[in-house]
Length: 300
Image (cartoon, rainbow, N blue to C red; front, side, top):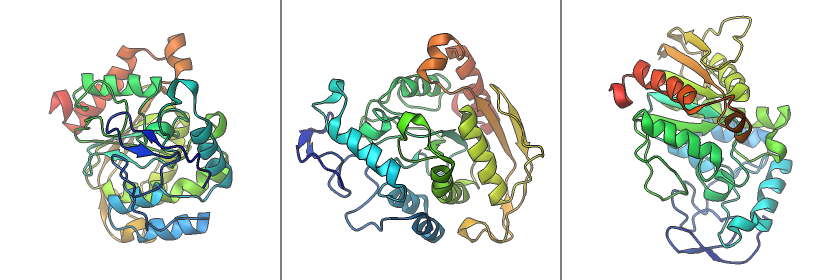
């Protein structure tokens, strides 16, 4: 691991950490321990994801994954070099696990952590402008306890909602390769399989999250329409209940899958929000519809 060796105070707890943060050293919400098994290859990801029996197992294994050399080098080099605005803070510098309710009725799926957002804070969609937009909207529709999320350990809580990324490491240029996407897919499959009984709505932020989610639910056993539905803001796909594939993760053989609605939203990236491609009312409308369909939030 590339480590800067300089111990800096966590912005909320004041505890000192090097960057990247070693597992099991006390970082808020760190799901891993010092002896959590580490995936060193895509084959390891597949094996460890298949062995997970709870979302906590997936979270821990995800947070120490080293299966993609390019992503490992990038996330750790940024954690050491830092951005000037946060030069006096430690950087998480590890993959980002899913976060939120262990029994979500609403899932929010994005592309990957931001290199100075989740890669810095240790929580998905936290600490950057995209996260600011997303949490503010989640709060307005009754799915988040606070309108902001600055860092892991800040008291934020999601109600009936879980957020995750299709790719768990911050990629250079925010563009993971197809190989990296596929290497990370077993983590997504395992997490979906473990929470799907409770899920009623999935909100996909951007086309990458949309495509990754539809691929994942097809592997789980859902009958995804062909040709695959195209992404767009407020796009909608109804996935009928059915039986999981016998080879699906988490030994879901002959288990009944619930009916799920998939909604699309433009990603709250700076490019989209600065240009007006995505506005607050547009994002609120999609998330409010998710809350309504799941019978939670302001509609619960």
